[in-house]
Image (cartoon, rainbow, N blue to C red; front, side, top):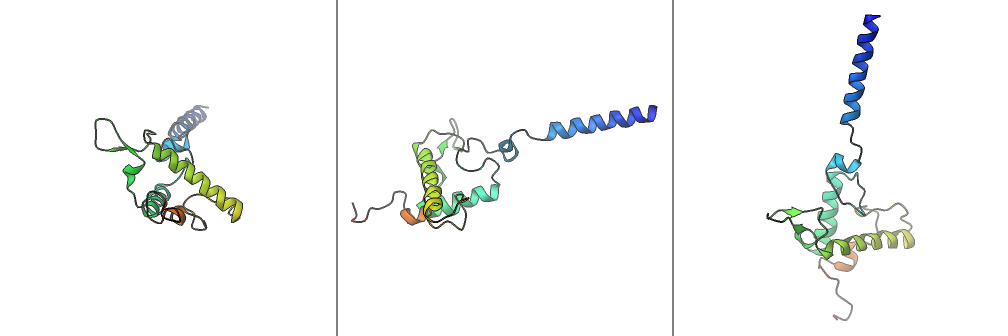
Length: 136
């Protein structure tokens, strides 16, 4: 009987350890917060690819174009919504996914997918603001 009590106690301790080490929120696993368009469980590799390949290359801008500096430091606060450009970027991502889904049948498309027909570069061509067709 004593042997079963020890085994049961050991199993309880192991179960508590496993439960307490499992994150309740997927965003806490990767450390990213305030993701409103991109998946909360996005990998670092995927996020960096989107930020560099789609935004930096597509718009010709750096991180500080959308991300504000943290108060009292020269580091960027990636979760902050202080800059309006960040919300504009979210709206542009939603629009891009919607256009690809509606007109190009990319039903489950996400920003960063190589299957997207319309991307940031389609309109921006490496510039922060797209140029209108007559140079206006």
